[in-house]
Length: 125
Image (cartoon, rainbow, N blue to C red):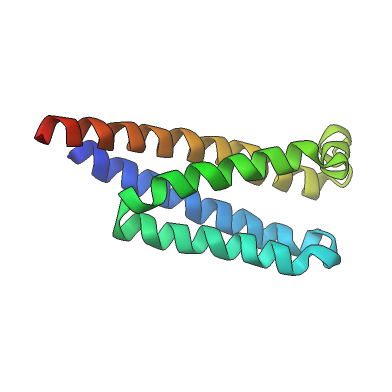
């Protein structure tokens, strides 16, 4: 049980960190995608709230959105160009940290929480 509370806190911190990096990155991005960026960042804020309230309701959405962000950054030629050239440097850092590092952490932490929840439910039956 203590492990689940720790995981809940870790996932919340990761989601808040993603939101902070996103808020920093939104002004750096392409203005035509402003609405999409705000919607995406809003989803991380909502998932952070849900993770604090009921972690079991957010693990699968966390994993799905993390995978979507990773895949989206990977298939975007412009994002790959920015990250490979580090030009502009600020955009590259935001893309790498927010689009990969924090997303992988969210994916792994949510996967662990999902697996532990399944183990806990199996032990209580």
